[in-house]
Length: 511
Image (cartoon, rainbow, N blue to C red; front, top):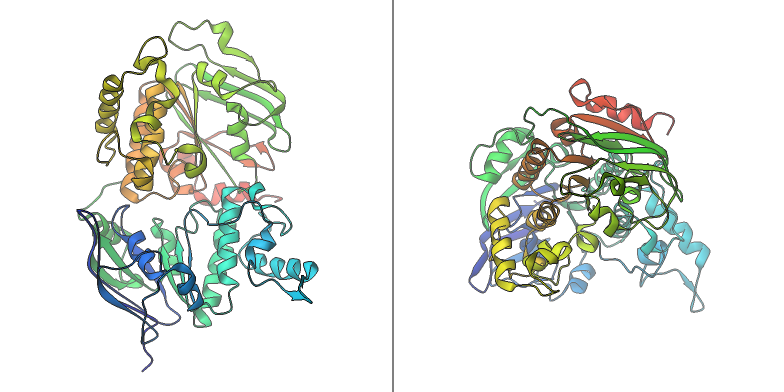
């Protein structure tokens, strides 16, 4: 009988006093898609860092196809056929997509790169994982790509490696559309049928049920369950991950819409959106659905002043705080800035948490208070004591798991980083929350906490405009939903009257 592709036996790893892994074991067969599940901080990333050569185990052993396996670095792991695609893709921003795909293995003749051959190979690699609705030009610089397109390039690069024996995918679909997820799943099934093993890390249990054959659950750095996906329901998986039964994670209490908070009329950007219109009221959550590339992020960024707007009107409701309504209402123009939008009561949570949502090098306290330092002291000075007290209060209110206000943000899990970014909007006391993929890449429990924060904000009279690629959360937390297609928004409809099929059908109509 053939040896398993990967055997992890009694692996442990500690970082100072923190025991990240304690005698964890894992077995993956050749050609198997194995789901690695657990909440943020459960030890999944540490375990995969050891398998991919980025970290060394303190104890335990690994085998790859029956041979002892102890990579000294990621390069050695890749040379042995182990490739990992991280949730935050590791790409060279100043190189083209094609150059990233085949960096170090470019087709050459007489010492010169064969550009046309490189582009042809790149198109073939991209074709495996991209959909017609989200094409990627291999000649484009990676710096020009959206987060979802960068993710697809990283996946395509790993799948294009001829020596790949074990592929590790960490939250590969967190920012992908339904069409791109379907294309990715086709590629995973293709390589697994060819004998490649896949370790699939995801918080989307519906996807795990579609693509994985078996699973392992980690909790607090320890194995707590393993088994066949076909024999385990999503509810049972959640219970194993959380250690207790969880109720419905979608928080949606009874809310009464109030006065107009935001009106957008025929908003046009440089490329997208194209004549988008919406009305958002206090006390409600309005969701924006649609395929990637439809212009959803561009809409929020245009409203907030991060990207130029060619034409259209944005009217902001007159809010509390003693600000004259005249300063709150007006046309969007090229000189609009995020600072002006913040002054008008609008705040944006970016989909790109690593690059725009959180400063990884700053502390929790600095990240949380950065946009409103004036409240922490007089004459341009910040009172450290007042800042720490304020931040400690927000940490407690939002349940941010950290060592304290001074801990560096990069040391927090993705879910807790997201809560810090969300807390910054609440600390700034914005009245309109513009949320772009607010639960991207965070676990079930953290998602539930973010939903509860959104619900509480709406109950308090704030207005929430949310973009999401995850249809169940749109249907679960929103009051109304509009579908964006080719830069234009469809009619707003009650979420209770819609289902996933309705949203997909409208998004893909004539696409």
